[in-house]
Amino acid sequence: MIYIPSSELVTLLKEYFPTLPSSIEISNKYFTSSQKVTQSNDTSIEFSILTCTPATDLSTLTFPDSEGKLLLVQLPNPEAYESFMSSPTIDTISNWCLDSSAELCIHRTYPHEISEEKEGLERVKEALDNFMWEERVDKPRPTLPEVPSKPSQPSQPSQPSQPSQPSLSLHSPPLIPDSDPDDLFKVMSMVQSVRSMSLNNSFPSDTARRKKAEEVAKLLQLAMGDDEDSDDDWENGDFSDLNVPVTLPPSSVETFKDDDKGWDVTLPSPPSPSPPSPSVSKDVGVVLLVNLSKLSGGTIHCKNDKNSNNDPVAVSKWKKKIEEEWKVYDKVEDEGVVKRSGGSVWVEAVREMRKGGEFWIPVFQK
Image (cartoon, rainbow, N blue to C red; front, side, top):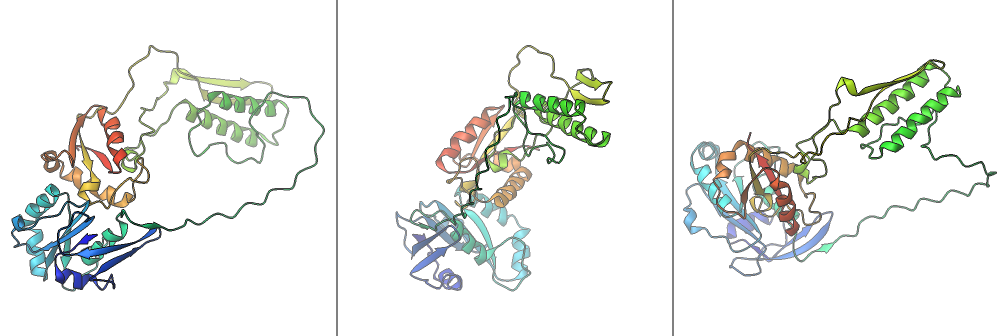
């Protein structure tokens, strides 16, 4: 059920939802949902939309206990818009929305340039379309056509068994995979394959031999340690790569060379054993753990997968906003919206808090 106490707003939204004032029909590529519209506070309300102007006394506005909340601020002309955006009133209303776990939406009722981000009534429609309603009918997902099986090949005479090695040929694609290998022994087998091909004169030229040798060297380097550490992994829900990359010193490089065949390639050798050390994690002092599901009025969530979210673009915009206003959000006392953490504790904390479907992110002070 949707709570819209303003009859004027119901009339305006009828352009987007023809079934108003009685109901709103939601349909996107994932599901359909039919929601009743009410002007009275009800315990079964899932989404609430209130309207106001910059002069409205916020103490007269009250959101019911709904998961989705949105405040629409109406501005009738360019002068009102410019005045509102440059006055302390916008901060007052923004803080009120933050305390109410509601989204602030600006609605310019006069003709204006279309901005890149949706605003006004279009943003209201987008929020309703993307909200995860309790009562909805999921649309069937398209099924992929079955791949016909290949005809069986006639059996070949058995050959003496040989130690298993990765397939390697002159015309095989580059050996560098999409993700780092986790089996160092497999990579070393590839090194032996290149060496065997070199000894058996299987390469048509030195250029082809060196190219394959360089590919195997790069593959081994990837197996020895990752050289990237992206700070954006947590933003999309991925906590699988929190290790610090290892840079090998020049003394740990070993050269393989065969004087008869001219096969040579420089490979990084495994680092010498060292005493075990505590696991390295990002220790950046105070970290703000922010509930984007609350700030977005429920439009951002991780109900389908706790390790991802349904709107990465909106998450990125919220992250930048909170980074720029870090001190403001650091003063928020509602632990349902903002929590404080430190050291490496935030990793497990975020994982735990996302289990309920609310999408929390860590935000670091710049």
